[in-house]
Image 1 (cartoon, rainbow, N blue to C red):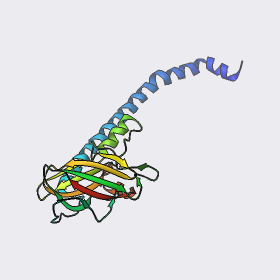
Image 2 (cartoon, rainbow, N blue to C red; image 1 turned 30 degrees about the horizontal axis):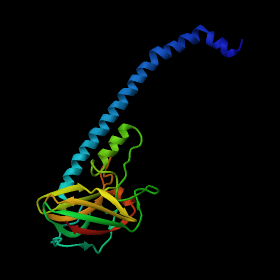
Image 3 (cartoon, rainbow, N blue to C red; image 1 turned 90 degrees about the vertical axis):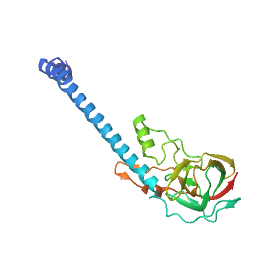
Length: 222
């Protein structure tokens, strides 16, 4: 008979094994479950607090440059500057009017990259990976919870009010993408992509620094 078989038949060994299985492991499993649950609750409560902070700072326009006395868009306009996806809030120096519809034409100049090898486009990324908890955490952390990752967003703001909309883009041809929005108020128009802005340490624009890509912007009142 082998030494292993002898050990398994030993009464003391069997007793120790039963103690570990029925008396030690269940409490340890229960404690680990409690710790993991408490950690998840703490994480989501913290993210929710930062979510409220982000909304308030967004409303105040803290991530955007100071507004200028921008002219209203009357006809077709191709903006002289190039929109960069690394900008937390890119000014168009154009004003739009409440209730009016506008067409946005983006022509990609530099390929859009969300991270080192994650190529994307103005359509954005439907990013779902990992566990459902990780996906919810990622959604809460984005600037717009409704928008796809890297999807263009617009901000319209004036001295007293502001709004942020997701811009649904469709591929027209080649490197050209087209979208339409309706202005909810009178104000200056800004662009940025939907990027993560909340980490466990708070609200930040640092995730924008990893973005690559640019596009020319054309605007048409409809």
